[in-house]
Length: 327
Image: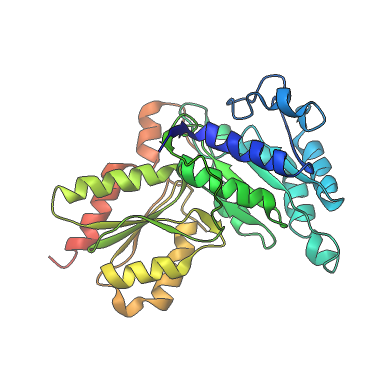
């Protein structure tokens, strides 16, 4: 099977859906003339023209609101934030308009809109450009929140998100756009809310999503050298969360470590911990451990970044703690 980059998988998803449905359009900063800040939308202006690939001013609140209004009137906008850090400027439109409109209109107005762009740290970008908002948006009823970890999932999930009649937050990573993976040429869709077991195992379950799946899978490879068999579950979406897949995995392995990039308070890992202790408490042979970023703004210095973010070493240490906590 061919291998393409993460950015190419996203581009294919948007191109295919825009060819399929003339109501789909892309709008955001530098998506057209510049071919996208990360070259995700490269060539799209040439094919679809300025009415469907639209450059905007640096005004997230404004173009997010235009997108919501367009979605209420029968179009299917894809709104690109150059980073989800900038979505804070537009959060009133996302939370108070897009997420609530179906409910507040008594079912009269769907808002089929995708807000997409990168989340989390991307190296030395400073505290204001390195934050994770997956758990923030997942907290809000009316939204779906998708965080793919590889090109195959990214394409299938983005196509599904564009066709969805509800607002979808689609979160990527600047550090993944160049990642390559196998993506079939034929069309496929991946349902939102279905986790995927990326690696089968018997001794411990590792749950993660997005680019931190790289940490989870690398930790599993390290543990294999010591005879520890780790099952790695990729959530793929954090609203809805596929709790059933996680619970069934824990019932098999009897141990759970959750790895995510967000700050610890009110994180996705907190919610998973609650559900697992409620539905699989009697199966646990050790307390649940979680790895998150430190509870602090991300510094600029690369040594401090490494110390604050989840990494393989911290993950392996946590897994050994749940494996050998009785010894």
